[in-house]
Image 1 (cartoon, rainbow, N blue to C red):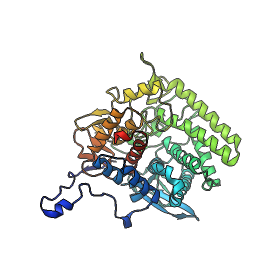
Image 2: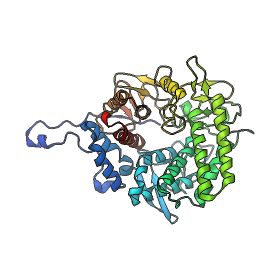
Image 3: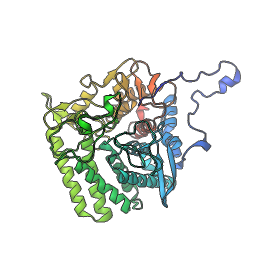
Image 4: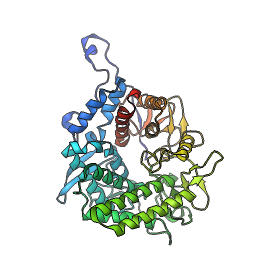
Length: 466
Protein backbone atom coordinates (compact mmCIF):
# COMPACT_ATOMS: atom_id res chain seq x y z
CA UNK A 1 0.00 0.00 0.00
CA UNK A 2 1.45 3.38 -0.96
CA UNK A 3 1.04 6.88 0.41
CA UNK A 4 2.50 9.64 -1.74
CA UNK A 5 2.37 13.18 -0.43
CA UNK A 6 3.28 16.39 -2.14
CA UNK A 7 4.01 19.08 0.44
CA UNK A 8 5.02 22.72 0.27
CA UNK A 9 8.34 23.87 1.59
CA UNK A 10 8.57 25.13 5.16
CA UNK A 11 6.33 28.07 5.94
CA UNK A 12 7.82 31.35 4.80
CA UNK A 13 7.89 34.03 7.44
CA UNK A 14 6.17 37.31 6.78
CA UNK A 15 8.33 40.17 5.61
CA UNK A 16 6.83 43.13 7.41
CA UNK A 17 6.86 44.61 10.90
CA UNK A 18 7.33 43.23 14.36
CA UNK A 19 5.06 40.22 13.72
CA UNK A 20 7.56 38.86 11.23
CA UNK A 21 10.44 39.48 13.63
CA UNK A 22 8.61 37.59 16.38
CA UNK A 23 7.69 34.56 14.28
CA UNK A 24 9.82 31.55 15.21
CA UNK A 25 12.08 30.26 12.49
CA UNK A 26 11.20 26.65 13.33
CA UNK A 27 7.73 26.48 14.90
CA UNK A 28 7.03 23.28 16.81
CA UNK A 29 5.23 20.54 14.88
CA UNK A 30 4.16 18.70 18.02
CA UNK A 31 0.46 18.52 18.95
CA UNK A 32 -0.62 21.02 21.64
CA UNK A 33 0.03 19.67 25.12
CA UNK A 34 -3.64 18.93 25.75
CA UNK A 35 -3.93 16.86 22.58
CA UNK A 36 -0.91 14.62 23.09
CA UNK A 37 -1.72 10.94 23.56
CA UNK A 38 0.85 10.43 26.31
CA UNK A 39 3.34 12.63 28.14
CA UNK A 40 6.42 11.47 30.03
CA UNK A 41 8.30 13.87 32.25
CA UNK A 42 11.45 11.81 31.76
CA UNK A 43 11.16 12.05 27.97
CA UNK A 44 10.54 15.80 28.11
CA UNK A 45 13.60 16.22 30.37
CA UNK A 46 15.75 14.22 27.94
CA UNK A 47 14.53 16.33 25.02
CA UNK A 48 15.54 19.51 26.83
CA UNK A 49 18.91 18.06 27.86
CA UNK A 50 19.71 16.76 24.38
CA UNK A 51 18.69 19.96 22.59
CA UNK A 52 21.33 21.86 24.56
CA UNK A 53 23.99 19.67 22.92
CA UNK A 54 22.77 20.31 19.36
CA UNK A 55 24.40 23.31 17.72
CA UNK A 56 22.38 23.16 14.51
CA UNK A 57 18.96 24.79 15.16
CA UNK A 58 17.19 22.89 12.39
CA UNK A 59 18.55 19.59 13.64
CA UNK A 60 17.41 20.48 17.17
CA UNK A 61 13.95 21.30 15.82
CA UNK A 62 13.73 18.01 13.93
CA UNK A 63 14.79 16.14 17.05
CA UNK A 64 12.16 17.79 19.24
CA UNK A 65 9.44 17.06 16.68
CA UNK A 66 10.46 13.47 16.01
CA UNK A 67 11.67 11.91 19.26
CA UNK A 68 8.34 12.12 21.15
CA UNK A 69 6.20 11.43 18.07
CA UNK A 70 5.25 7.90 19.14
CA UNK A 71 4.07 9.13 22.54
CA UNK A 72 2.48 12.28 21.14
CA UNK A 73 0.42 10.61 18.46
CA UNK A 74 0.26 6.79 18.42
CA UNK A 75 -0.24 5.27 21.87
CA UNK A 76 -3.47 4.39 23.62
CA UNK A 77 -3.08 3.37 27.26
CA UNK A 78 -5.79 1.87 29.42
CA UNK A 79 -6.81 -1.44 30.93
CA UNK A 80 -7.93 -4.70 29.37
CA UNK A 81 -9.26 -7.64 31.38
CA UNK A 82 -8.09 -5.97 34.57
CA UNK A 83 -4.49 -5.35 33.45
CA UNK A 84 -2.54 -2.42 32.05
CA UNK A 85 -2.89 -2.30 28.28
CA UNK A 86 -1.05 -0.32 25.61
CA UNK A 87 -1.89 -0.25 21.91
CA UNK A 88 0.49 1.47 19.49
CA UNK A 89 -0.46 2.27 15.89
CA UNK A 90 2.22 2.82 13.24
CA UNK A 91 0.92 6.28 12.40
CA UNK A 92 -1.33 6.56 9.39
CA UNK A 93 -2.62 2.97 9.63
CA UNK A 94 -5.03 2.14 12.45
CA UNK A 95 -3.43 -1.18 13.35
CA UNK A 96 -0.52 -2.33 15.52
CA UNK A 97 2.44 -4.14 13.99
CA UNK A 98 4.39 -6.26 16.47
CA UNK A 99 7.62 -5.04 14.89
CA UNK A 100 6.79 -1.36 14.62
CA UNK A 101 5.20 -1.01 18.05
CA UNK A 102 8.26 -2.56 19.70
CA UNK A 103 10.67 -0.38 17.74
CA UNK A 104 8.60 2.77 18.28
CA UNK A 105 8.87 2.66 22.08
CA UNK A 106 12.38 1.18 22.24
CA UNK A 107 14.17 4.57 22.40
CA UNK A 108 12.32 5.38 25.64
CA UNK A 109 13.49 2.22 27.39
CA UNK A 110 16.47 3.84 29.17
CA UNK A 111 14.00 6.18 30.91
CA UNK A 112 11.61 3.61 32.41
CA UNK A 113 13.33 3.64 35.79
CA UNK A 114 12.69 7.39 36.06
CA UNK A 115 9.00 7.46 35.15
CA UNK A 116 6.29 5.19 36.61
CA UNK A 117 3.79 6.16 33.91
CA UNK A 118 6.30 5.09 31.26
CA UNK A 119 6.83 1.78 33.06
CA UNK A 120 3.09 1.17 32.97
CA UNK A 121 3.09 1.91 29.24
CA UNK A 122 5.80 -0.71 28.68
CA UNK A 123 4.06 -3.28 30.87
CA UNK A 124 0.84 -2.71 28.96
CA UNK A 125 2.53 -3.17 25.60
CA UNK A 126 4.34 -6.33 26.70
CA UNK A 127 0.98 -7.75 27.79
CA UNK A 128 -0.82 -6.67 24.62
CA UNK A 129 1.87 -8.20 22.41
CA UNK A 130 1.66 -11.49 24.33
CA UNK A 131 -2.11 -11.48 23.79
CA UNK A 132 -1.56 -10.86 20.06
CA UNK A 133 0.93 -13.70 19.72
CA UNK A 134 -1.46 -16.03 21.49
CA UNK A 135 -4.24 -15.09 19.07
CA UNK A 136 -2.09 -15.89 16.02
CA UNK A 137 1.71 -16.19 16.06
CA UNK A 138 1.77 -15.99 12.25
CA UNK A 139 0.12 -12.55 12.10
CA UNK A 140 2.17 -9.38 11.77
CA UNK A 141 -0.49 -6.76 12.59
CA UNK A 142 -3.41 -6.57 15.00
CA UNK A 143 -6.52 -4.51 15.69
CA UNK A 144 -7.28 -2.36 18.74
CA UNK A 145 -10.22 -4.62 19.60
CA UNK A 146 -8.88 -8.15 20.19
CA UNK A 147 -12.31 -9.48 19.22
CA UNK A 148 -12.74 -7.23 16.19
CA UNK A 149 -12.78 -8.21 12.53
CA UNK A 150 -10.48 -6.57 10.00
CA UNK A 151 -12.09 -4.16 7.56
CA UNK A 152 -8.75 -3.37 5.93
CA UNK A 153 -8.60 -3.98 2.21
CA UNK A 154 -5.70 -6.39 2.50
CA UNK A 155 -7.65 -9.15 4.26
CA UNK A 156 -7.44 -12.52 2.48
CA UNK A 157 -10.74 -13.64 1.04
CA UNK A 158 -9.94 -17.36 0.84
CA UNK A 159 -8.01 -17.58 4.14
CA UNK A 160 -10.11 -15.76 6.76
CA UNK A 161 -8.29 -14.21 9.67
CA UNK A 162 -9.07 -14.72 13.34
CA UNK A 163 -10.73 -11.95 15.39
CA UNK A 164 -8.22 -9.30 16.42
CA UNK A 165 -5.89 -9.88 13.46
CA UNK A 166 -5.20 -6.98 11.10
CA UNK A 167 -2.88 -8.76 8.67
CA UNK A 168 -1.44 -12.27 8.53
CA UNK A 169 1.91 -12.04 6.79
CA UNK A 170 4.40 -14.40 8.42
CA UNK A 171 7.61 -12.49 9.16
CA UNK A 172 10.25 -13.89 11.51
CA UNK A 173 10.94 -10.50 13.07
CA UNK A 174 7.30 -10.17 14.17
CA UNK A 175 8.09 -12.68 16.93
CA UNK A 176 11.60 -11.36 17.59
CA UNK A 177 10.80 -7.73 18.33
CA UNK A 178 8.41 -8.39 21.25
CA UNK A 179 11.11 -10.51 22.91
CA UNK A 180 13.70 -7.77 22.33
CA UNK A 181 11.34 -5.31 24.02
CA UNK A 182 10.46 -7.61 26.93
CA UNK A 183 14.10 -8.60 27.49
CA UNK A 184 15.24 -4.98 27.41
CA UNK A 185 12.51 -3.96 29.87
CA UNK A 186 13.33 -6.85 32.22
CA UNK A 187 17.06 -6.07 32.15
CA UNK A 188 16.44 -2.35 32.75
CA UNK A 189 13.97 -2.75 35.61
CA UNK A 190 14.08 -6.26 37.05
CA UNK A 191 10.27 -6.00 37.05
CA UNK A 192 8.61 -9.43 36.84
CA UNK A 193 5.02 -8.13 36.82
CA UNK A 194 4.19 -8.48 33.08
CA UNK A 195 5.82 -11.90 32.78
CA UNK A 196 2.89 -13.98 33.97
CA UNK A 197 1.48 -17.25 32.69
CA UNK A 198 0.02 -15.53 29.62
CA UNK A 199 3.42 -14.14 28.58
CA UNK A 200 5.05 -17.48 29.29
CA UNK A 201 2.50 -19.28 27.11
CA UNK A 202 2.93 -16.75 24.29
CA UNK A 203 6.69 -17.19 24.26
CA UNK A 204 6.32 -20.95 24.15
CA UNK A 205 4.31 -20.41 20.97
CA UNK A 206 7.24 -18.44 19.55
CA UNK A 207 9.51 -21.47 19.82
CA UNK A 208 6.75 -23.71 18.45
CA UNK A 209 6.28 -21.43 15.44
CA UNK A 210 9.99 -21.16 14.71
CA UNK A 211 10.23 -24.95 14.76
CA UNK A 212 7.18 -25.37 12.51
CA UNK A 213 8.80 -23.02 10.03
CA UNK A 214 12.02 -24.98 9.95
CA UNK A 215 9.78 -27.26 7.85
CA UNK A 216 11.67 -30.45 8.48
CA UNK A 217 8.61 -32.51 7.63
CA UNK A 218 6.36 -30.85 5.06
CA UNK A 219 5.10 -27.31 4.57
CA UNK A 220 3.64 -26.78 8.02
CA UNK A 221 0.35 -24.97 8.75
CA UNK A 222 1.00 -21.59 7.17
CA UNK A 223 0.30 -20.35 3.65
CA UNK A 224 -0.53 -16.93 2.21
CA UNK A 225 -2.34 -16.01 -0.98
CA UNK A 226 -3.74 -12.64 -1.94
CA UNK A 227 -5.22 -11.29 -5.16
CA UNK A 228 -3.18 -8.20 -5.95
CA UNK A 229 -1.56 -6.50 -8.96
CA UNK A 230 1.67 -6.41 -6.89
CA UNK A 231 3.57 -9.73 -6.90
CA UNK A 232 5.14 -8.86 -3.54
CA UNK A 233 1.69 -9.12 -1.91
CA UNK A 234 1.37 -12.89 -2.31
CA UNK A 235 3.51 -16.02 -2.32
CA UNK A 236 4.55 -18.68 -4.81
CA UNK A 237 3.26 -22.25 -5.05
CA UNK A 238 -0.18 -22.00 -3.50
CA UNK A 239 1.08 -19.66 -0.82
CA UNK A 240 3.87 -21.84 0.58
CA UNK A 241 6.77 -20.07 -1.15
CA UNK A 242 9.62 -21.17 -3.37
CA UNK A 243 11.14 -24.65 -2.85
CA UNK A 244 13.78 -24.94 -0.13
CA UNK A 245 16.02 -27.61 1.30
CA UNK A 246 15.29 -28.11 5.03
CA UNK A 247 18.70 -27.20 6.41
CA UNK A 248 17.67 -25.94 9.85
CA UNK A 249 16.92 -22.31 9.09
CA UNK A 250 13.49 -20.76 9.64
CA UNK A 251 11.30 -20.03 6.62
CA UNK A 252 9.88 -16.52 6.22
CA UNK A 253 7.16 -15.82 3.69
CA UNK A 254 7.54 -12.05 4.09
CA UNK A 255 10.32 -9.59 4.85
CA UNK A 256 10.21 -6.83 7.49
CA UNK A 257 8.96 -4.61 4.66
CA UNK A 258 5.81 -6.80 4.45
CA UNK A 259 6.99 -7.78 0.94
CA UNK A 260 7.17 -11.43 -0.10
CA UNK A 261 10.52 -13.17 0.12
CA UNK A 262 12.12 -14.54 -3.04
CA UNK A 263 13.99 -17.28 -1.15
CA UNK A 264 12.41 -18.22 2.16
CA UNK A 265 15.57 -18.22 4.27
CA UNK A 266 15.87 -14.52 5.06
CA UNK A 267 19.30 -14.12 6.67
CA UNK A 268 18.71 -11.01 8.83
CA UNK A 269 15.51 -12.59 10.15
CA UNK A 270 17.24 -15.86 11.00
CA UNK A 271 20.10 -14.09 12.76
CA UNK A 272 17.53 -12.12 14.75
CA UNK A 273 15.78 -15.38 15.68
CA UNK A 274 19.04 -16.79 17.08
CA UNK A 275 19.40 -13.83 19.42
CA UNK A 276 15.72 -14.03 20.33
CA UNK A 277 15.85 -17.71 21.27
CA UNK A 278 18.87 -17.19 23.48
CA UNK A 279 17.15 -14.31 25.25
CA UNK A 280 14.07 -16.48 25.79
CA UNK A 281 16.28 -19.18 27.29
CA UNK A 282 17.76 -16.70 29.74
CA UNK A 283 14.38 -15.29 30.72
CA UNK A 284 12.65 -18.65 31.20
CA UNK A 285 15.52 -19.84 33.36
CA UNK A 286 15.50 -16.74 35.56
CA UNK A 287 11.77 -16.08 35.71
CA UNK A 288 10.34 -19.59 35.84
CA UNK A 289 13.24 -21.92 36.55
CA UNK A 290 12.26 -23.74 33.36
CA UNK A 291 15.58 -25.22 32.31
CA UNK A 292 13.98 -27.76 29.98
CA UNK A 293 12.37 -25.06 27.84
CA UNK A 294 15.55 -22.98 28.01
CA UNK A 295 17.52 -25.93 26.66
CA UNK A 296 15.04 -26.33 23.78
CA UNK A 297 15.51 -22.64 22.90
CA UNK A 298 19.29 -22.94 23.05
CA UNK A 299 19.31 -26.08 20.90
CA UNK A 300 17.12 -24.46 18.24
CA UNK A 301 19.24 -21.30 18.33
CA UNK A 302 22.40 -23.34 17.83
CA UNK A 303 20.84 -25.26 14.95
CA UNK A 304 19.70 -22.08 13.17
CA UNK A 305 23.05 -20.37 13.78
CA UNK A 306 24.97 -23.31 12.32
CA UNK A 307 22.73 -23.39 9.24
CA UNK A 308 23.08 -19.64 8.68
CA UNK A 309 26.84 -19.93 8.98
CA UNK A 310 26.94 -22.81 6.47
CA UNK A 311 24.41 -21.57 3.90
CA UNK A 312 23.93 -17.85 4.52
CA UNK A 313 27.10 -16.30 3.10
CA UNK A 314 28.45 -15.55 -0.37
CA UNK A 315 32.09 -16.35 -1.13
CA UNK A 316 34.30 -13.63 -2.56
CA UNK A 317 38.01 -13.20 -3.25
CA UNK A 318 38.15 -10.43 -0.63
CA UNK A 319 36.31 -12.58 1.93
CA UNK A 320 32.76 -13.81 2.28
CA UNK A 321 29.79 -11.59 3.10
CA UNK A 322 26.20 -12.13 4.20
CA UNK A 323 23.51 -12.97 1.65
CA UNK A 324 20.07 -11.44 2.08
CA UNK A 325 18.08 -14.57 1.21
CA UNK A 326 18.99 -18.15 0.32
CA UNK A 327 17.13 -21.41 -0.37
CA UNK A 328 19.49 -24.07 0.97
CA UNK A 329 20.14 -25.39 -2.53
CA UNK A 330 23.00 -22.98 -3.16
CA UNK A 331 20.94 -20.15 -4.65
CA UNK A 332 21.66 -16.81 -3.00
CA UNK A 333 20.16 -13.36 -3.34
CA UNK A 334 22.26 -10.33 -2.50
CA UNK A 335 20.44 -7.10 -1.85
CA UNK A 336 19.33 -5.22 1.21
CA UNK A 337 16.01 -3.75 2.23
CA UNK A 338 15.83 -0.64 4.38
CA UNK A 339 13.42 -2.21 6.86
CA UNK A 340 15.00 -3.49 10.07
CA UNK A 341 16.18 -6.22 10.46
CA UNK A 342 18.34 -5.64 7.42
CA UNK A 343 21.91 -6.61 6.66
CA UNK A 344 22.93 -3.03 7.42
CA UNK A 345 21.25 -3.11 10.85
CA UNK A 346 22.74 -6.37 12.16
CA UNK A 347 25.04 -4.82 14.81
CA UNK A 348 22.31 -2.36 15.87
CA UNK A 349 20.09 -5.34 16.73
CA UNK A 350 23.05 -7.19 18.30
CA UNK A 351 22.65 -9.99 15.75
CA UNK A 352 26.31 -9.97 14.70
CA UNK A 353 29.43 -8.18 15.85
CA UNK A 354 30.86 -5.37 13.76
CA UNK A 355 33.46 -7.78 12.39
CA UNK A 356 35.25 -8.13 9.06
CA UNK A 357 32.38 -10.06 7.46
CA UNK A 358 29.89 -7.40 8.49
CA UNK A 359 32.22 -4.65 7.23
CA UNK A 360 32.40 -6.31 3.81
CA UNK A 361 28.62 -6.77 3.79
CA UNK A 362 28.03 -3.16 4.82
CA UNK A 363 30.26 -1.86 2.04
CA UNK A 364 28.37 -3.91 -0.54
CA UNK A 365 24.99 -2.84 0.81
CA UNK A 366 25.98 0.82 0.39
CA UNK A 367 27.05 0.37 -3.22
CA UNK A 368 25.73 -0.45 -6.66
CA UNK A 369 26.23 -4.15 -5.83
CA UNK A 370 22.92 -3.75 -4.01
CA UNK A 371 20.13 -3.30 -6.60
CA UNK A 372 18.13 -1.30 -4.04
CA UNK A 373 20.87 1.22 -3.28
CA UNK A 374 19.99 4.59 -4.79
CA UNK A 375 22.09 7.70 -5.20
CA UNK A 376 20.80 11.05 -6.45
CA UNK A 377 21.12 14.79 -6.02
CA UNK A 378 19.12 14.75 -2.76
CA UNK A 379 21.01 11.94 -1.06
CA UNK A 380 21.84 8.29 -1.11
CA UNK A 381 20.61 5.25 0.73
CA UNK A 382 18.81 1.93 0.61
CA UNK A 383 15.21 1.37 -0.38
CA UNK A 384 13.44 -1.82 -1.40
CA UNK A 385 10.65 -3.22 -3.56
CA UNK A 386 7.96 -1.89 -1.20
CA UNK A 387 8.12 1.65 -2.60
CA UNK A 388 10.09 0.92 -5.75
CA UNK A 389 13.13 2.26 -7.53
CA UNK A 390 14.73 5.63 -6.70
CA UNK A 391 12.99 5.76 -3.31
CA UNK A 392 15.47 6.13 -0.44
CA UNK A 393 14.34 5.24 3.07
CA UNK A 394 15.61 7.61 5.78
CA UNK A 395 15.70 4.56 8.07
CA UNK A 396 18.62 3.21 6.05
CA UNK A 397 20.54 6.46 6.48
CA UNK A 398 19.92 6.26 10.23
CA UNK A 399 21.24 2.69 10.29
CA UNK A 400 24.36 3.80 8.43
CA UNK A 401 24.95 6.41 11.13
CA UNK A 402 24.25 3.95 13.96
CA UNK A 403 26.82 1.48 12.61
CA UNK A 404 29.86 3.73 12.30
CA UNK A 405 32.20 5.74 14.50
CA UNK A 406 33.46 7.78 11.54
CA UNK A 407 32.39 11.34 12.37
CA UNK A 408 32.56 12.47 8.74
CA UNK A 409 30.22 9.65 7.75
CA UNK A 410 27.84 10.51 10.58
CA UNK A 411 27.79 14.20 9.62
CA UNK A 412 26.98 13.25 6.03
CA UNK A 413 24.09 11.07 7.19
CA UNK A 414 22.74 13.89 9.37
CA UNK A 415 23.00 16.26 6.42
CA UNK A 416 20.92 13.94 4.22
CA UNK A 417 18.32 13.52 6.94
CA UNK A 418 18.14 17.25 7.64
CA UNK A 419 17.79 18.24 4.00
CA UNK A 420 15.18 15.69 2.89
CA UNK A 421 12.26 16.21 5.28
CA UNK A 422 10.68 18.52 2.67
CA UNK A 423 9.85 21.23 5.17
CA UNK A 424 7.57 18.95 7.21
CA UNK A 425 9.78 18.65 10.29
CA UNK A 426 9.40 14.86 10.29
CA UNK A 427 11.03 11.78 8.79
CA UNK A 428 9.19 9.81 6.12
CA UNK A 429 9.03 6.26 4.89
CA UNK A 430 10.85 7.05 1.63
CA UNK A 431 11.77 9.98 -0.60
CA UNK A 432 12.82 10.31 -4.22
CA UNK A 433 16.58 10.35 -4.69
CA UNK A 434 16.40 13.66 -6.59
CA UNK A 435 13.29 15.29 -5.12
CA UNK A 436 12.55 14.97 -1.37
CA UNK A 437 9.15 16.59 -1.87
CA UNK A 438 8.12 13.31 -3.46
CA UNK A 439 7.80 11.13 -0.37
CA UNK A 440 5.66 8.39 1.14
CA UNK A 441 3.94 8.40 4.53
CA UNK A 442 3.81 11.80 6.17
CA UNK A 443 3.08 10.12 9.53
CA UNK A 444 5.42 7.19 10.11
CA UNK A 445 6.19 7.12 13.81
CA UNK A 446 8.90 4.44 13.71
CA UNK A 447 11.10 6.56 11.44
CA UNK A 448 10.49 9.63 13.59
CA UNK A 449 11.35 7.98 16.88
CA UNK A 450 14.33 6.14 15.40
CA UNK A 451 15.72 9.48 14.25
CA UNK A 452 15.31 10.76 17.81
CA UNK A 453 17.09 7.67 19.13
CA UNK A 454 19.97 8.33 16.75
CA UNK A 455 20.36 11.92 17.95
CA UNK A 456 20.34 10.83 21.61
CA UNK A 457 22.95 8.19 20.74
CA UNK A 458 25.13 10.74 19.00
CA UNK A 459 24.74 13.28 21.79
CA UNK A 460 26.23 10.68 24.10
CA UNK A 461 28.83 9.04 21.84
CA UNK A 462 29.68 11.66 19.19
CA UNK A 463 28.46 15.08 20.39
CA UNK A 464 30.81 16.84 17.99
CA UNK A 465 28.69 15.65 15.06
CA UNK A 466 25.69 17.68 16.25
